[in-house]
Image (cartoon, rainbow, N blue to C red):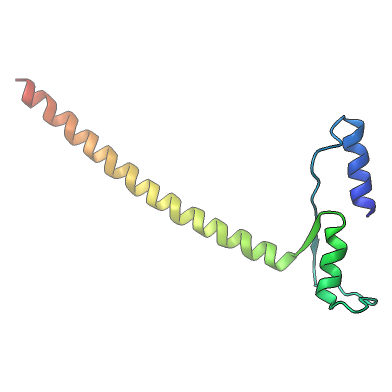
Length: 103
């Protein structure tokens, strides 16, 4: 709660107190809860984070997702490069044919 309160205070000082806040914790391992009561540990942890519009992600998952997104970017970039090359070839062919038609 201290992170939420600190950020809320800073935003209020900047007249941005109504801006939405999401707190994301990057953790090395899944958090534990000693006093979950009747709730499952996962539900208890989820409820605790909901109080501050927060969530957690695991460091390994974060790295895995970043690697997957970068691979997707590289694949898309390769496709764009192929299309650019095709368009350049078409433009070059069009430019060489145009003078012949004008004559």
